[in-house]
Image (cartoon, rainbow, N blue to C red; front, side, top):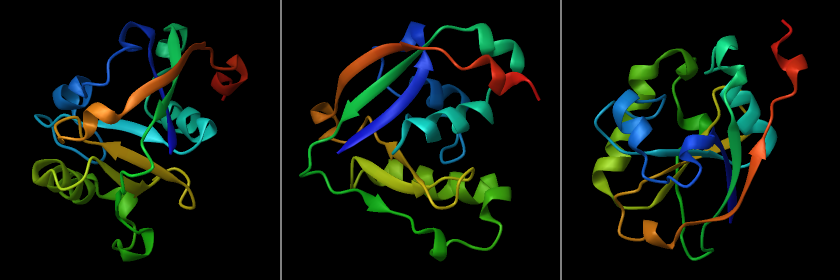
Length: 151
């Protein structure tokens, strides 16, 4: 399986999940390492746009193509199993994701995107014993199209 991640170029070689540990995210509370990835490059862009300020658009970014062995089966949170309007309740999603990270039963969790319901992100657990099998297969500089910031 291949997943994608857009990250600040300073951290283009870092899969440690330290940023999520410091700041938390939609699917984890601070204090728990996690790596956020998406199934499509375009979803990465949208996820970044809802999370960065316009002043950050001048930061240099990298697009990472991350390879996950096909033998690694993700745990799955199905959109239809979530409560209505789950996108508006970060405490709800943070609890579920943090429990996944703490349990270490799988290295990756397939989660619905709060931006595009029909697409998925993958939360990776850097503390899982199989995580070392996950590698960056390609890394390129990435520039957001400036038109994305003209709203």
